[in-house]
View (cartoon, rainbow, N blue to C red):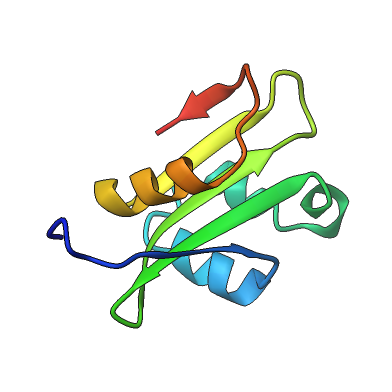
Length: 96
């Protein structure tokens, strides 16, 4: 992606969109897929990054543990756009 790409970062609860993106690499995303279950979903914040009508990145902040867990997935520039937009805790465990 070029520096001119306009990314739209959206906090989403749309499990179908989230699941579809996670299916791009289901082994890497196995724990995140589990976080779509109702028992875990309330502790999650999902940031979907779109550009040119397509999903380009996804960032999960799971706050059910201490420290919270941050999982990133997708194009580097798209993930960077999400991280620049979303509120982040002082400490976290990051999987990228």
